[in-house]
Image (tube, rainbow, N blue to C red; front, side, top):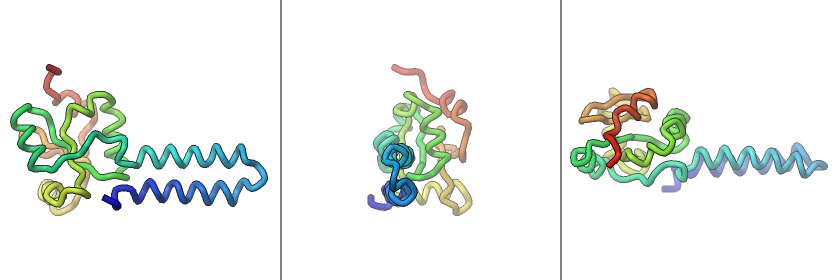
Length: 144
């Protein structure tokens, strides 16, 4: 749980220190710099991703509704890119945080020759590593 927040906390701490040290006489510039670091912290936090579930539950749900499973981890720039480019469609996938689910991390290693490479999207039981977001969107079943 705490490991998922490390990048976000580091962005906030570094932004605070940098703003305080760099712009001592200019609170406006310090505030702008701090806001930029807060935005980076938010993007790298688990908050922008839909609620994660375990990989076994995700696979069970995927078999029932045909939606892809996404193996991801906080702080991964490719996961963030996928999430942002999917937009509102992101809630239609099953998201598995491999830092919270050991079985999810194992599934990522199994799909990627022993590496925990993410995002790994599993469609109909077949893993696809770092696929194009447009391709992922095309794999979604039509909304009910």
